[in-house]
Length: 296
Image (cartoon, rainbow, N blue to C red; front, top):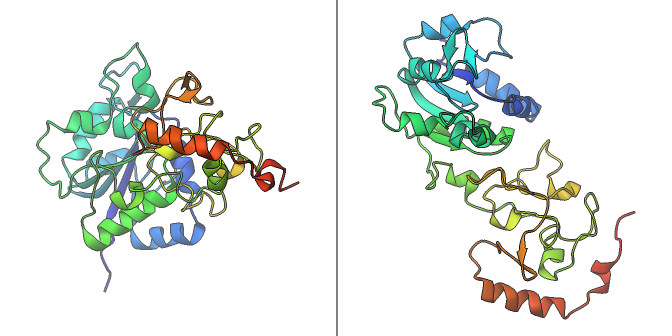
Protein backbone atom coordinates (compact mmCIF):
# COMPACT_ATOMS: atom_id res chain seq x y z
CA UNK A 1 0.00 0.00 0.00
CA UNK A 2 1.42 3.37 -1.03
CA UNK A 3 0.89 6.03 1.62
CA UNK A 4 -0.13 9.49 0.46
CA UNK A 5 2.61 12.05 0.78
CA UNK A 6 1.45 15.66 1.10
CA UNK A 7 2.39 17.63 -1.99
CA UNK A 8 4.73 20.60 -1.41
CA UNK A 9 5.10 23.38 -3.97
CA UNK A 10 7.69 26.12 -3.37
CA UNK A 11 7.53 29.21 -5.57
CA UNK A 12 9.90 32.16 -5.63
CA UNK A 13 8.75 35.74 -6.06
CA UNK A 14 10.96 38.83 -5.53
CA UNK A 15 13.75 37.25 -3.53
CA UNK A 16 17.51 36.92 -3.09
CA UNK A 17 17.11 33.10 -2.70
CA UNK A 18 18.37 33.34 0.87
CA UNK A 19 15.62 31.13 2.27
CA UNK A 20 16.35 28.45 -0.31
CA UNK A 21 19.99 28.50 0.74
CA UNK A 22 18.87 28.27 4.35
CA UNK A 23 16.73 25.20 3.58
CA UNK A 24 19.78 23.54 2.04
CA UNK A 25 21.71 24.08 5.27
CA UNK A 26 19.16 22.18 7.36
CA UNK A 27 20.21 19.18 9.39
CA UNK A 28 20.78 16.45 6.80
CA UNK A 29 18.85 13.76 8.66
CA UNK A 30 15.88 16.12 9.11
CA UNK A 31 16.00 17.06 5.43
CA UNK A 32 16.11 13.40 4.45
CA UNK A 33 13.09 12.75 6.68
CA UNK A 34 11.33 15.65 4.95
CA UNK A 35 12.01 14.16 1.51
CA UNK A 36 10.75 10.77 2.68
CA UNK A 37 7.61 12.21 4.29
CA UNK A 38 6.51 14.78 1.68
CA UNK A 39 6.19 14.91 -2.09
CA UNK A 40 8.52 17.85 -2.87
CA UNK A 41 6.76 18.41 -6.18
CA UNK A 42 8.26 21.70 -7.32
CA UNK A 43 10.99 24.18 -6.49
CA UNK A 44 12.37 26.32 -9.34
CA UNK A 45 15.98 25.65 -8.34
CA UNK A 46 15.98 22.28 -6.55
CA UNK A 47 13.59 19.97 -8.36
CA UNK A 48 13.82 18.83 -11.98
CA UNK A 49 11.02 16.33 -12.55
CA UNK A 50 8.19 18.88 -12.81
CA UNK A 51 7.78 22.25 -14.51
CA UNK A 52 5.75 25.27 -13.53
CA UNK A 53 3.19 24.21 -16.14
CA UNK A 54 2.85 20.90 -14.26
CA UNK A 55 2.13 22.89 -11.12
CA UNK A 56 -0.58 24.88 -12.91
CA UNK A 57 -2.25 21.63 -13.95
CA UNK A 58 -2.54 20.34 -10.37
CA UNK A 59 -6.07 20.29 -8.97
CA UNK A 60 -4.88 20.61 -5.39
CA UNK A 61 -1.73 21.58 -3.50
CA UNK A 62 -1.29 20.52 0.11
CA UNK A 63 1.41 23.01 1.07
CA UNK A 64 2.20 26.15 -0.92
CA UNK A 65 5.43 27.74 0.26
CA UNK A 66 6.20 31.23 -1.02
CA UNK A 67 9.63 32.84 -0.87
CA UNK A 68 9.88 36.54 -1.71
CA UNK A 69 7.69 39.63 -1.94
CA UNK A 70 4.72 40.04 -4.30
CA UNK A 71 4.07 42.66 -6.99
CA UNK A 72 1.78 42.95 -10.00
CA UNK A 73 4.47 44.83 -11.93
CA UNK A 74 6.14 42.62 -14.55
CA UNK A 75 8.95 45.13 -15.03
CA UNK A 76 10.31 44.26 -11.64
CA UNK A 77 9.88 40.50 -11.72
CA UNK A 78 8.11 37.85 -13.79
CA UNK A 79 8.16 34.07 -14.06
CA UNK A 80 7.17 32.34 -17.31
CA UNK A 81 5.49 35.59 -18.35
CA UNK A 82 3.51 35.73 -15.08
CA UNK A 83 3.91 38.60 -12.66
CA UNK A 84 4.20 37.34 -9.10
CA UNK A 85 0.68 38.42 -8.12
CA UNK A 86 -0.82 36.47 -11.05
CA UNK A 87 1.27 33.47 -10.09
CA UNK A 88 0.06 33.70 -6.50
CA UNK A 89 -3.55 33.96 -7.67
CA UNK A 90 -3.27 30.82 -9.80
CA UNK A 91 -1.82 28.72 -6.99
CA UNK A 92 -3.37 30.09 -3.78
CA UNK A 93 -6.88 29.08 -4.79
CA UNK A 94 -5.90 25.40 -4.98
CA UNK A 95 -3.82 25.28 -1.79
CA UNK A 96 -4.80 23.88 1.61
CA UNK A 97 -1.99 25.57 3.53
CA UNK A 98 -0.06 28.71 2.58
CA UNK A 99 3.27 29.35 4.29
CA UNK A 100 5.23 32.57 3.76
CA UNK A 101 8.91 31.63 3.99
CA UNK A 102 10.97 34.60 5.14
CA UNK A 103 10.36 38.27 5.89
CA UNK A 104 9.86 39.31 2.25
CA UNK A 105 6.96 36.91 1.72
CA UNK A 106 5.54 37.75 5.15
CA UNK A 107 5.35 41.54 4.83
CA UNK A 108 7.47 42.66 1.86
CA UNK A 109 10.77 42.87 3.74
CA UNK A 110 13.61 44.86 2.23
CA UNK A 111 11.89 44.98 -1.19
CA UNK A 112 8.91 46.87 0.23
CA UNK A 113 11.35 49.69 1.01
CA UNK A 114 11.80 50.44 -2.70
CA UNK A 115 10.20 53.80 -3.39
CA UNK A 116 9.98 53.03 -7.12
CA UNK A 117 7.23 50.46 -6.60
CA UNK A 118 4.74 50.82 -3.77
CA UNK A 119 2.92 47.69 -4.94
CA UNK A 120 5.58 45.38 -3.50
CA UNK A 121 3.97 43.75 -0.47
CA UNK A 122 3.75 40.55 1.51
CA UNK A 123 1.52 37.61 0.60
CA UNK A 124 -1.08 38.33 3.30
CA UNK A 125 -1.43 41.94 2.16
CA UNK A 126 -2.89 40.64 -1.10
CA UNK A 127 -4.67 37.49 0.06
CA UNK A 128 -6.53 39.06 2.98
CA UNK A 129 -9.42 40.10 0.72
CA UNK A 130 -9.51 36.95 -1.40
CA UNK A 131 -11.98 34.11 -0.93
CA UNK A 132 -9.72 31.05 -0.97
CA UNK A 133 -11.80 27.96 -1.64
CA UNK A 134 -9.58 25.17 -0.37
CA UNK A 135 -7.66 26.86 2.43
CA UNK A 136 -7.84 24.90 5.72
CA UNK A 137 -5.75 27.12 7.98
CA UNK A 138 -4.90 30.83 8.36
CA UNK A 139 -1.86 31.92 6.37
CA UNK A 140 1.36 31.30 8.28
CA UNK A 141 4.26 33.77 8.40
CA UNK A 142 7.76 32.44 9.03
CA UNK A 143 9.65 35.71 9.44
CA UNK A 144 13.44 35.91 9.29
CA UNK A 145 16.12 37.06 6.87
CA UNK A 146 16.65 34.28 6.16
CA UNK A 147 14.28 32.02 8.04
CA UNK A 148 15.87 29.26 10.12
CA UNK A 149 15.65 25.97 8.16
CA UNK A 150 14.32 24.07 11.16
CA UNK A 151 11.36 26.46 11.41
CA UNK A 152 10.30 25.45 7.89
CA UNK A 153 10.56 21.74 8.61
CA UNK A 154 8.96 21.99 12.07
CA UNK A 155 5.98 23.89 10.65
CA UNK A 156 5.45 21.36 7.86
CA UNK A 157 5.71 18.34 10.14
CA UNK A 158 3.43 19.94 12.76
CA UNK A 159 0.74 20.66 10.17
CA UNK A 160 1.08 17.20 8.64
CA UNK A 161 0.63 15.60 12.05
CA UNK A 162 -1.88 17.91 13.77
CA UNK A 163 -3.36 19.93 10.86
CA UNK A 164 -3.25 23.12 12.92
CA UNK A 165 -0.78 25.19 14.91
CA UNK A 166 -1.26 28.16 17.23
CA UNK A 167 -0.28 31.54 15.77
CA UNK A 168 0.64 34.86 17.39
CA UNK A 169 -0.84 38.22 16.41
CA UNK A 170 1.57 38.39 13.43
CA UNK A 171 0.48 34.95 12.15
CA UNK A 172 3.74 33.32 13.28
CA UNK A 173 3.81 29.92 15.02
CA UNK A 174 3.81 30.56 18.77
CA UNK A 175 5.94 27.50 19.41
CA UNK A 176 8.78 29.10 17.42
CA UNK A 177 8.31 32.82 18.12
CA UNK A 178 7.02 32.95 21.70
CA UNK A 179 10.47 33.66 23.22
CA UNK A 180 13.24 36.11 22.46
CA UNK A 181 16.62 35.67 20.77
CA UNK A 182 18.00 36.84 24.12
CA UNK A 183 16.87 33.55 25.69
CA UNK A 184 19.77 31.11 25.56
CA UNK A 185 22.33 33.76 24.59
CA UNK A 186 25.71 32.83 26.01
CA UNK A 187 26.37 36.54 26.74
CA UNK A 188 23.51 36.97 29.22
CA UNK A 189 25.87 37.22 32.22
CA UNK A 190 27.54 40.19 30.52
CA UNK A 191 24.11 41.72 29.86
CA UNK A 192 23.09 41.37 33.51
CA UNK A 193 26.25 43.09 34.81
CA UNK A 194 26.38 45.63 31.98
CA UNK A 195 29.76 44.59 30.64
CA UNK A 196 30.00 45.83 27.07
CA UNK A 197 31.72 44.06 24.17
CA UNK A 198 34.82 45.91 23.02
CA UNK A 199 34.27 45.11 19.31
CA UNK A 200 32.52 42.73 16.92
CA UNK A 201 33.68 39.13 16.70
CA UNK A 202 34.91 38.75 20.27
CA UNK A 203 33.68 36.10 22.71
CA UNK A 204 33.33 38.41 25.71
CA UNK A 205 30.92 41.24 26.45
CA UNK A 206 27.31 42.13 25.68
CA UNK A 207 26.44 43.43 22.21
CA UNK A 208 23.30 45.29 23.34
CA UNK A 209 24.77 48.44 24.89
CA UNK A 210 26.87 49.70 21.95
CA UNK A 211 26.69 47.30 18.98
CA UNK A 212 22.96 47.50 18.29
CA UNK A 213 21.98 43.96 19.36
CA UNK A 214 18.18 43.49 19.19
CA UNK A 215 18.04 40.08 20.92
CA UNK A 216 16.18 41.41 24.02
CA UNK A 217 13.30 42.61 21.85
CA UNK A 218 13.30 40.08 18.96
CA UNK A 219 11.01 37.05 18.85
CA UNK A 220 12.95 33.98 17.74
CA UNK A 221 14.67 30.90 19.16
CA UNK A 222 18.01 31.42 17.36
CA UNK A 223 19.98 30.84 20.57
CA UNK A 224 18.06 27.68 21.47
CA UNK A 225 17.74 26.05 18.03
CA UNK A 226 21.22 26.75 16.71
CA UNK A 227 22.08 27.41 13.07
CA UNK A 228 23.92 24.51 11.44
CA UNK A 229 23.39 22.84 14.84
CA UNK A 230 26.40 24.73 16.26
CA UNK A 231 26.10 28.52 16.26
CA UNK A 232 24.12 31.75 16.27
CA UNK A 233 24.88 35.37 15.40
CA UNK A 234 25.53 36.46 18.98
CA UNK A 235 27.68 33.41 19.72
CA UNK A 236 29.87 34.38 16.77
CA UNK A 237 30.16 38.00 17.95
CA UNK A 238 27.58 39.46 15.55
CA UNK A 239 24.66 41.42 17.05
CA UNK A 240 21.12 40.17 16.49
CA UNK A 241 19.66 42.55 13.87
CA UNK A 242 16.04 41.76 14.69
CA UNK A 243 15.26 40.20 11.30
CA UNK A 244 12.15 38.35 12.51
CA UNK A 245 10.33 41.56 13.43
CA UNK A 246 8.11 43.56 11.11
CA UNK A 247 10.18 46.76 11.35
CA UNK A 248 13.19 45.03 9.73
CA UNK A 249 15.32 46.31 8.06
CA UNK A 250 16.01 49.46 10.10
CA UNK A 251 18.64 52.12 9.48
CA UNK A 252 22.10 51.86 11.09
CA UNK A 253 21.45 48.40 12.49
CA UNK A 254 24.91 47.91 14.00
CA UNK A 255 24.73 50.71 16.54
CA UNK A 256 22.61 51.20 19.65
CA UNK A 257 20.51 54.32 19.20
CA UNK A 258 20.48 56.42 22.37
CA UNK A 259 18.97 59.52 23.88
CA UNK A 260 21.10 61.20 26.58
CA UNK A 261 23.11 58.00 26.86
CA UNK A 262 20.04 55.79 27.40
CA UNK A 263 19.07 53.17 24.77
CA UNK A 264 15.96 54.36 22.93
CA UNK A 265 14.64 50.77 22.88
CA UNK A 266 14.92 48.81 26.13
CA UNK A 267 14.35 45.05 26.59
CA UNK A 268 10.80 43.96 25.78
CA UNK A 269 8.37 44.16 28.69
CA UNK A 270 10.60 46.37 30.89
CA UNK A 271 9.79 50.05 31.35
CA UNK A 272 12.63 52.57 31.16
CA UNK A 273 12.51 53.42 34.86
CA UNK A 274 13.00 49.78 35.84
CA UNK A 275 15.71 49.41 33.21
CA UNK A 276 17.63 52.44 34.50
CA UNK A 277 17.36 51.23 38.10
CA UNK A 278 18.62 47.74 37.32
CA UNK A 279 21.45 48.80 35.03
CA UNK A 280 22.47 51.59 37.40
CA UNK A 281 22.89 49.10 40.22
CA UNK A 282 24.69 46.59 38.01
CA UNK A 283 27.12 49.24 36.77
CA UNK A 284 28.26 49.97 40.35
CA UNK A 285 29.71 46.47 40.64
CA UNK A 286 32.90 45.49 38.87
CA UNK A 287 33.02 41.75 38.18
CA UNK A 288 36.72 41.11 37.52
CA UNK A 289 36.16 37.76 35.80
CA UNK A 290 33.87 39.36 33.21
CA UNK A 291 36.23 42.22 32.44
CA UNK A 292 39.08 40.13 31.14
CA UNK A 293 39.48 37.92 28.10
CA UNK A 294 38.27 34.41 28.90
CA UNK A 295 38.97 32.72 25.56
CA UNK A 296 42.21 33.20 23.59
